[in-house]
Length: 285
Image 1 (spheres, rainbow, N blue to C red):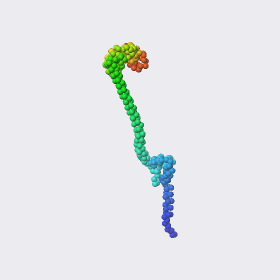
Image 2: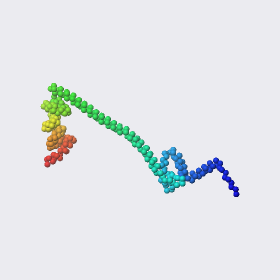
Image 3: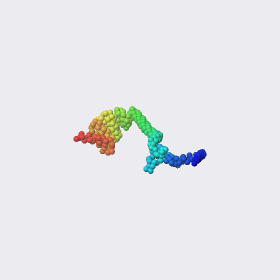
Image 4: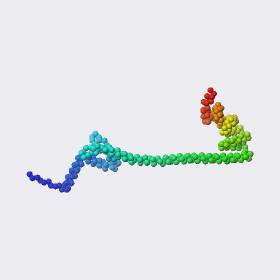
């Protein structure tokens, strides 16, 4: 029996055979089928959604029916172990890239409002400070002008009792207590007005003596004020303060109670009377 020698294939035939073999091998390899399906899925979803990183797909769990899209295959067709570290490294790098940017954006967004708040607060303090300074300057200038005018009248011996009183009050506001008492004493001696108005002179005189540490004269002046005008709440409070300073708590408490009798909502008298109530009760017991 003669053997027929095999004829060599032409180049076109060999190419077709190679293609068929390649197709057969691709169709039989599960990994190749998976890659082709994944490539088709990518091309379909590219225009609709952003792709997940491949490392994230590699960490998907297997279902009971078999490996999911996240499984990888070797040459034998068996699923390989997943590389969870790839997804972890990928997510870490993404966070490392995004987080400083987000913090910088947040800081940049908050910087302008915080600076604006500081600027508004600073401007508010400056405005209030400037207002107080200007107000003090204007008040001091008015006092100086009034004191100069009244002083000229006194030196010319053309001053009335009201001029002496006004000059004494101005000197009290300037804390010149010795000069204030001199003018207030002249106002008291030359007073020709209403007795109720004279109570204000005695109250101012008592305030001057109180600040000069002459407490007895201060109490006497305050008592003259409340005798002339019984409803003079300020004089009653000043009398209570003068008595309290020398630890005469009984008379101080009585003075505050008299002030509350004419002005029940007076906060100064109410607070001091409450503070002295227990002390007076204990001393009486």
